[in-house]
Every structure is written in structure tokens, then in C-alpha cells.
Image 1 (cartoon, one colour):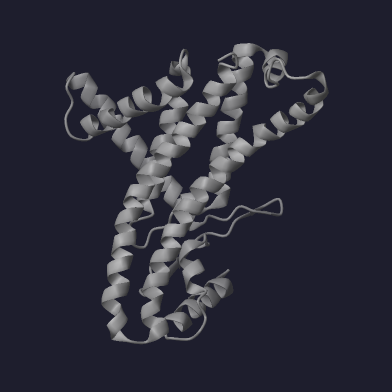
Image 2: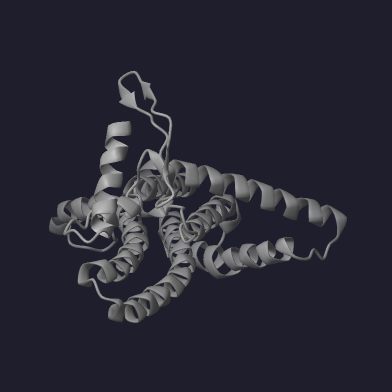
Length: 279
């Protein structure tokens, strides 16, 4: 583990020193078994192997733990404030705005009747993704949602809610029977069965890739712009690189909000389509 960490640090420093190796960009974007505080140093994380499976703690996992802890703290504070006053202020008021937004602008119009039972899940993924996205914008942190394993896991959970909601509302056989559109010619039914079956899996795949790609792309662009300073080896490019990098960074704040909204909205939309097949 320490040899791997040393190799990564050496590659990063070589790139900053002006060599042609540009692997330092991926080093800052990808996951790793360390906390990166370069150029001040790196803190290795515990290496754990369970039954031959690598269960090591990584920096993306640490960021997710931080996100969960922060959400528990702030949401509990908001809940306590409601016990003291019906008109909470500060953090509780801000969280109420987001909760009402998810309820009235995402869940209710996308799912329709019976949306209340899916609100806990939609609020969970919205706040979790939003918190992870913003934590990734903090210096020396990492963006957990730029990890395909994280986005794929979130997409799989959405997939389970989509199928579970459809089966609970329409029954097991009724749900899968309703996937095939009514009134199509008989000879097209085998083709439509295959198409609709594949469509069940393309939805979570699109959710995972969309979030992963958007959260990764912005960080790569920022590091690439900063890297121009070392690649071109001139101070004249500094104002341009820093200005554009700052612009992309500010744009990333908007992207963090949008991606949390899109993932939650699409999950709610797919749940609504599964629950209300007759609409």
C-alpha cells in the first residue's frame, strides 16, 4: 500500500515539476487509499482484506461518511427546531425549502397519486448526492459522486424502488404484463418484450453514467486548465488558466445542484411510470 502511494505521489510531483507525465490529473480525480493533502503530504487509510476481498477504506468512502454525519446532524437540528417553534429559522428554514421543493416540484408531479410513500427515498438521495457534490468542491476533499461504483449503487437502489413500486401497485404479473404497450400487432410482441426488458436496465444505467460523467468532467477540466501553467512553463498563461478554472469552479457549484435534482427527478419519473402504467 505504501509503495503504491509513494508511486502516485512521485508521478504527481513529476508532473508539477514540468515533466510530460499528466497522470496527476487522474490522481486527483480517481479514488485512492489515502487522504490527499499535497503538497503538504498524504495520509494512508487502513488496508482491510476480508475473505480475500479488498474492503479497504478509501477517500471517497470517507467523504460519504462525512456527508452522512453532516446530514444526520443538520436534519436532527432541524427536527428539534420544529418542536420548539412552528416557524423555524436558519438551517431548518433552508432545509424546509429544499424538502418542499422535492415534494412539490419533483415527487408530486412525477409520481402523482401515492407519491408520499416514496418521499423518504427521494429526499435521501437528493440530500446525499447534493452533500457529496458540495463536499467535492472543498479543497483537499474528493467527489464521491465521480466514482462509478457510487453512482451505480445509487442507480441500483433506484432500480429496486422502481420495480418494487410497480409490483406493489400492479401486482407481479400485472406489472410485467403492463410493460408491453396495448394494441400492438401480435408479431411485434416478442420484439417489444425484449425491448421493454432491456429498457428496465437502461434507465438505471443512464442514471449512473449521467451523474458520474458530469461530476468527473468538471474536475478534469479544472485540473487541465491549471496544468497548462506547468506544461507551457510560462507566467503569461497564469491569468488565463486561473480565470477559466475559477469560472469552471463556479459552474461546478451549479452543476452540483443540477445533478442532484436530475438524479432525483429521473428516479421519481421512472417510479411514476412503473406505478401508473395505465397513464
